[in-house]
Length: 248
Image (cartoon, rainbow, N blue to C red):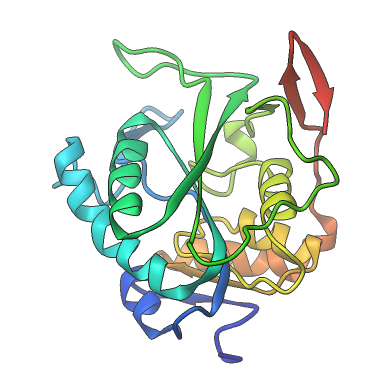
């Protein structure tokens, strides 16, 4: 297992998952494909490479199913899986994760400070985070609070010109998820690590990590950020509680 930990590995995520030992991962925290096109400022339209056969919920569910089977195998008892996505992707993950035995615990809605609509569509002001736990032991809840009276997190969206990746998530969001939903000795896995925000958060919080991605440029970006994680800038993040903002 040592050869995997605190490293970013290039290659097919499903193949790499199959190489990990059973019950070796404390938490999977990831921003998987949303199964939708990504409009870029320069006018071109990019799309996730997984969209060809996943332009409906049935196709997306078929794509997610083998990953869910590997997730339940590699995650420890009571371990966390937190997956970000839009409604289309979330429907597929809910179906496949529950089918293999994960327990759905909560949904977090992320409210962004800005949004840009695609053609003939609404602006993208929200992202969902689905929180699951593997059965068999108590899940992590790393806070003195017994309950948090909101599932709406308010934070900034990284300006396009500052992103290393078209779907890059802000560090304050991944720090929040890693800190709250894992314990100190959990190995954090991001099988779709992109620009590496989840892995950088793991390093900041003091968790071992493993990252997978197919794209050589994204791997390079992740490794660069991890080599200098102490220079990363974190902004404020809030909960929307009973009509007011409460800083986390």
